[in-house]
Amino acid sequence: MSERLSFEAADVQEEFFSRGWTDGLPIVPPTPARVSAMLEVIAAEDPELLIGYLAVRGRGVSLEQAATNAVMAGCRPEYFPVVVAALEAMFDADFNLHTVLTSTGGAALCLVVSGPMAPEIGMNARHGALGSGNRANATIGRAVRLVATNVLGARPGESDASSFGHPGKYTLCLAEDPPPKPWRPLHAGLGYAPGDTTVTVLPTEAPHQIAQQLTRSAEALLRTVASAIRSPATFSTGKAGQGLVILGPEHARFCVEQGWTQEAVREFLYRESRVTPEELLRNGVHSASGSAFEEIPDAEGRIRSVASPADVYLLTAGGEGAGWSVWIPNWAPASVARAVTRRVRPAGEPLPECGPDGCLVPGLAER
Image 1 (cartoon, rainbow, N blue to C red):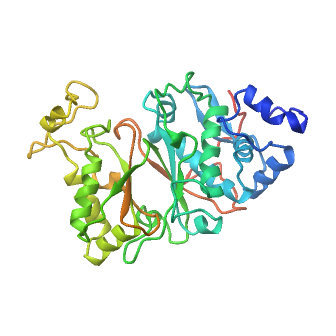
Image 2: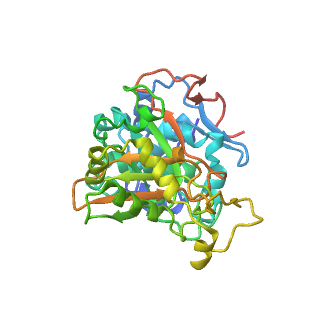
C-alpha cells in the first residue's frame, strides 16, 4: 500500500514541487477517492499487483502507483486502461526500459493508440494531434512519464542522464486517424482483431515535421520522407533503427489513389533511406566501424537507416492543410531498444497474471 500523506489543500502544489514529484507543471492531488476511481475501471482486486519489475533498478510499478500518477497527470478514469497497457509494453524486454530512461540521448516515451477506444475516450488524431489542447493525449502520455520519474526514479541529472531532452519528455501521445481504404489501421496490420485497441510505445527523438506541398506525386513525397529518415544528424541513421512515419491526410490519399499499398510504402522508405558510409562522412558523421552499431554495406554499398520495412511504423493522422507529414525516429538503433505493442483491455476486463499480452506480477512494488 502506498504511503498516505495529509496536506492542506493550499499546500499541495508546493509540497509536490518541493519533493520533486512533478514534471515542473502543477498536478491534480491524488486523493484516495480519485485513485480508487481509477483502479475501479480496470477491476483491480489487488492494487499492489505489479505491472512490471525493473530488476536493474530494484523497482516495480504497481497498479496503485500507476493510478496515483495517472490522477496527478490529470487523466480521467476511462483513460487508465491505456496507461496500464503502455506501461506493460515498456516493461517488455525488447523495449529495454532501463537504457531508454538513462541514456544521454534523451528518449521520449512515444505512445500511439490505434483502434476504436481512442475516439471513444476523446483522443485527438486530427489537427494538432502532436500538440496541445487535448486532455486525453496530453494526460495519458504525461502519466507514463510521471511513473518513470516518481516510481522508477528517472529524474533529470540523476538516473535520467539526458543531455538536453525535448518537449516530448513531458508527453508524446497521439491516436491514429483510421487510414483510407483499402489501407488497414496500425493495430490490424500488427495482427490484432478489428475491434481491438492497441498502444504502441516507441523510445523516440522529437518529431521532425516534413513539408511536401508542391506535388501530388506519391513517389515524390515519399522520397522527401526518405530524405528525412536518412538525415545524417539522426543518431540511428546508418545503424538500422526504427521509427514512426505519420502521413498527413493529403499525403496518405495520394498514396492510396496512386495504388501504393502500406507494404510498398514501407519497403520504399526502407530502401530509399539507406546511405553510404561516404555520404555520412561528407556530412561529418564518422563510421561506426568496430562499434556495436557497425553496419556492413550491402551489394549496392549502402547501409540501413531502418532495420527492415517492418521497422517503419506507418500511421495516418493530422489535419488537412497544405501537405505535411512527420518522421519520429527512435533515439537509438533497433539493436538497443525496439517498439512494443500491447492490447488495451477494455474497462472491467479481468487482469490476468499472465497471458498473451504479458504478465502482471503479484507482490510489493519494491523488492
